[in-house]
Length: 98
Image 1 (spheres, rainbow, N blue to C red):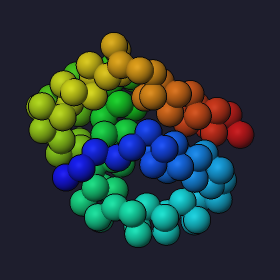
Image 2: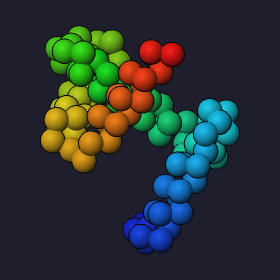
Image 3: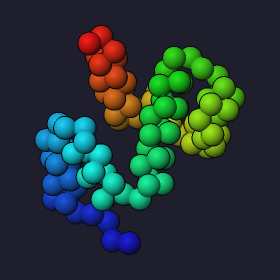
Image 4: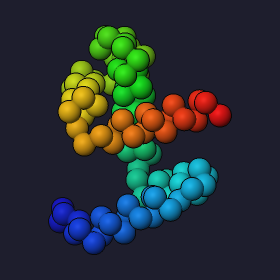
């Protein structure tokens, strides 16, 4: 598969950034991704939430069904990544305050 160009990626990111309605985003993801891909993204976010809360790997694995490799990858990104998971967790924390 050919890698997406910077312009193609920016277009995708702009669409995500400007989609503020949850239902609109859900149908966009449904069309752009397979059900499996959407489920995997949701699972990774749940893994990040649990790891951030201090849950041990085995508890995360049992609760989510994620592989040890996925949990380790999420942990690495959570602690040493670009900050995307941290931004997502901050959004979730803000929503809980509402």
